[in-house]
Amino acid sequence: MKFVDEATIKVEAGDGGNGCVSFRREKYIPRGGPDGGDGGDGGSVWLVGDEGLNTLVDFRHQRLHRAERGQNGMGRQMTGHKGADLEVRVPVGTRVKDLDTGEVIGEVLEQGQRLLVARGGRHGLGNIHFKSSTNRAPRQATPGTPGEKRTLGLELIVLADVGLLGMPNAGKSSLIARVSHAHPKIADYPFTTLYPNLGVVKLGEGRSFVIADIPGVIEGAAEGAGLGLQFLKHLSRTRLLLHLVDIAPMDDSVDPAGEVRKIVAEVEKFGGELLERERWLVLTKKDLLPAEEFEARRRQLVDELGWTGPVFGISSVTGEGLDELVQALMRHLEREAASETVAAGPDDEPYDPTRS
Image (cartoon, rainbow, N blue to C red; front, side, top):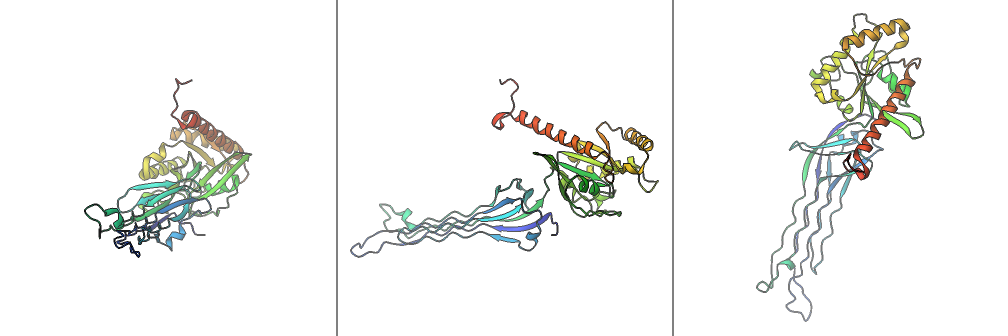
């Protein structure tokens, strides 16, 4: 199935039903009075999270989503039935934006989560509501109000704990294929990866995390070179970034430190807040170098970058260093989850260190 992470749709909630003008007409009751009923409310449009979906491709074909109109009121004080709500299923991780106002309506982040995107119109009132001592035969009723109509931009941002960042052919797809059950396309040419891939890394019962691989970023991506920066948004919800660097490039003129700086510069153009996220340096293709030369290149790269964070050396071909990396990732994510639980305190209340 084709991966589509952006779509534009129109949603139209149902109009409210009109109120009814009617008078009671029964034998032997010549002045029965008004008995017009109210209309029904219009149906609303909801987006519902569905973990079984992983692309917005269906919305490229069906762009209009309309809820049911409320029924008009009837005589004998009969109220029209409410219009049925429309539930539109979207992938978990979908961000919704009103394209006319620029407002971000919300995000669907959990299975079964419902997000109201267009509210149905209110029902009109029948003439029974307008009778009084001075107006015993009112001939007035109110129409239902129109339902909301919106043009929405849907943006799918994959949900992952760890994101992979790096130049094309840095070894991102090889890494995710080796540590998870994902099967991305792997080849020896740039931009083999054309869309994000997700893999689940399992270390035991109840211990797992999700890792995301996106197409490589190159210099000039902000101006549209390569695949541009369109997929960097998929790293915005990750907890940790792994910056992969080819430590043994085939072209001797390629400078690993320069490659790192190019990525950093392009990501800053996309949005500097992404670089504020914790980032680990992962040196790939370790198997192509003798141990002494690898260690020398590692020290040189760390010194040139002034890097102070964790550094790992791995080989996705031989598996060297992978267990150490995934174990460190799992411990880091578990510590983060534990600290968030402590900080929130019981019942998700703000943490108060003075409270016993």
